[in-house]
Figure 1 (tube, rainbow over the protein chains, first blue to last red):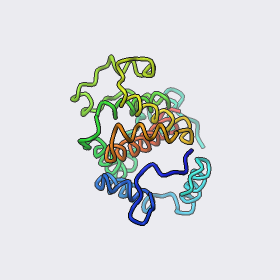
Figure 2: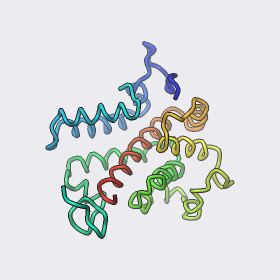
Figure 3: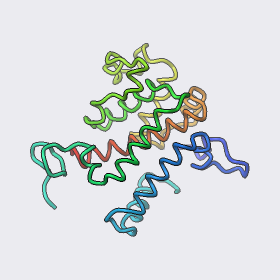
Length: 64
Length: 158
């Protein structure tokens, strides 16, 4: 796995989801709305969601 | 915990288990999911046939029969044929799959099987073929479809 970003960095030299979605702002908006609603609503409590998210990040070796 | 339905293998109650039925349990999420999925198909720089072939390949690798059974209208309207879909498992040796499709399918397969195995060279090839807007569409689509196929496998047809 490369540690070199595969998308152009922003003006501060950082490459992240924001710089990626600058190419597709509506797509980024729709993803964020879905993701935010998943976090904000529903019967699963936030600590459980966060534990699952962190575990998923560790299993996939994702720094986020 | 109860056992899955012995006929359908689904963890959802009832014989008509489907991903739409699962999403219907959270209608507000279902609507947002469909709006996100719809947006994937609006990028004028992304060939809908390439995108659909990648979606179907992701479904094949996950053995997600629900996702693999339907065809996206944009791809069919653009000329996707069932002959090409039938040839999808052997895309790497089939001349009907062009260089752009091959670059995209290479990354799509590794995205599902071992995302850490995607090389800089493979990403450079798909980036050169698609351009930045379609690359964003493509990688978002892979993430979304990989997730929805896993969702389908574990909840609807385990």
